[in-house]
Amino acid sequence: MEEIRKNPDISKKEILKKSKKSFLQYALNSEQKERIEEIVDNFEKKHETIEELLDGKTDIEKMFEKIFKFKPKGKIEFVKGSVSIGFACSETEDFTKSSFGKDDSGAQERSMPSGTIKRDVGIPGLENAVILVDKEIMENDKKEGINVNSVIQHEEQHAINAMFYKRSFDKEKWSSLLQEAIEENDIQKKELLLKRHLRADRVTAEPRAIDEIISYYKEGTNPIDVKL
Image 1 (spheres, helix red, strand yellow):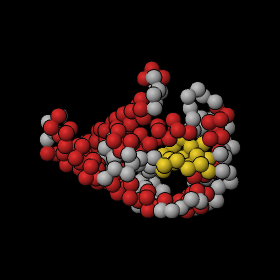
Image 2 (cartoon, rainbow, N blue to C red):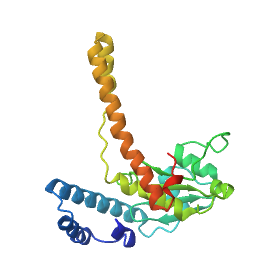
Image 3 (cartoon, rainbow, N blue to C red):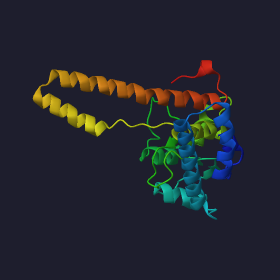
């Protein structure tokens, strides 16, 4: 991934060529090699989608409006990453509306993030690739070492991590099976489903915790200061 960070336009062929050194160095098995090739494929598709979206476009506000379906109130700064695109909003209202689908900037007594990554913006290929930064709240907080680039780097690490993890728990199917167990008053079935749910929660939570820790670590945060 360091090679991709250095050169976001690196070709799939070049990445795989460099990866083959790791295949030998770490004695990776066929399944691990296939997973790496799958990740490289994901990177290539994401990169192509980003390039198609940017294709000669210089009006950042219009690009923002195309993705989030509303015209920003304030100024929008654009940052292109290796596997992401970032929008730094000068107004908290624009940040909250694009992040959460509504203007939540007036909420009191709560912790507001200075950045976030959108899991889905309705554009195929941009899953886990669009980063939003709230410059207004960042400037008000004035935390040492926190700036647009550091937040973008932190959030982009989530985008990179997302290419490595697979999450497969089918919540709808589980809910349907649980409802059946309740209706049948099947105690053993309910216990089994509860165990599966707790196991799935752990399996889902562990990568998310690792994801967050790695993202803080990559931006240079002291491990002692990481709070999830």
